[in-house]
Image (tube, rainbow, N blue to C red; front, side, top):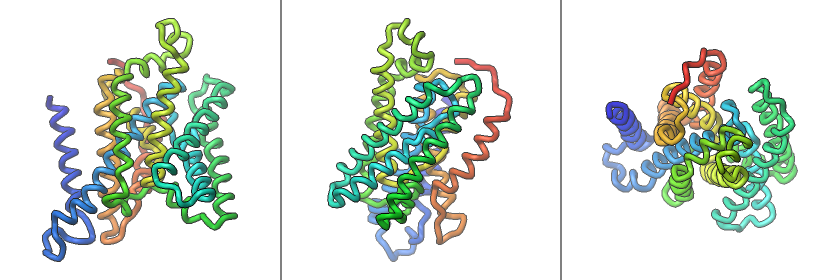
Length: 314
């Protein structure tokens, strides 16, 4: 009970800070405070929370799917593949509705993720660092292909926006797709036990009666749609799916069903905190939340590599 109250109190403080901070003051009388919150501050706050929660949960699925704690969607080429799909539909049919662009980006992200899974079957598993390195190279190749197409079609700025998570442009009418993440998170809670068994490996999962490939496909569809929605709406956000599940696992053990809610809340809180910090460090200018989180995530990642593991429980 104390833990839950502490997390909720911290989250509430971040939400209040996010609603209060901005170039326009709520108390100056120059703007209607309720209108400013409804049109700008609340959409931005909700977008940060949904993005963080969705990417953190997507990280749990990826780590269970490949049985490697150092893997997340950002290290499997998924955002780069989603950006390629978004770039393709923008070039072929620029007038397509946002939901259509998101669908194409999700299909491309799913194809890119399956490409990584196919590669992962040839990677020796003795060293856990090899698989993330393969993912970084694979994502780099996809990103280079996207940059080449963007350069030849004069869309470099478009790709730059898609690859850098920033909430400064989020307003009412431009973030609602992110609520899809809430529905996907609810679905993940329903299949949490299957995802846990998935992490035991194919042979053991089959011996327990799990349809391994069907569960893996369902999990990867959740990951692909989540990443595509985030890329289309705010841009890619690195490290969220990597460090949040690992920090929660070190703190509370590996009981996925018990940890999912705190993984989601922690992911949302950390991304919202990054956005708030980015707004105040050089006020009234802003630093993208992805940049703030990348600095924080890199430091935590190094700590995770070298800090001694705690005794597993849960």
